[in-house]
Image (cartoon, rainbow, N blue to C red; front, side):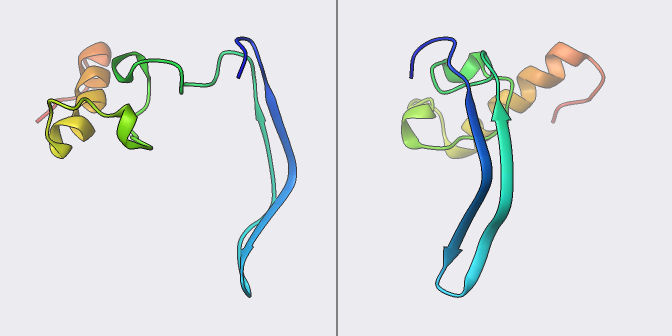
Length: 81
C-alpha cells in the first residue's frame, strides 16, 4: 500500500456458515495509522499478527512482553514485571 493511503470499510459483514462473525462493521483508517510497514519496536501496540512481525531471536513470551515493557518505560506510570 502506498504511503499516505487511507482505508474506509462500510457495513462489513462476515459469516461462517450460519454464524455471523461481523455484522455492520464500519471502520476508517486514516493516513499514518497503519503499522504494518513499521518495525516491531516502533509500533505502539502489543499485538503480534504474523510471524514476520516477530523478533526471531526472542522467545514467544519475550516478543509479547517487549511492546508492553516499552510502553511502561515510556509512561513511567506502571511497574513492569
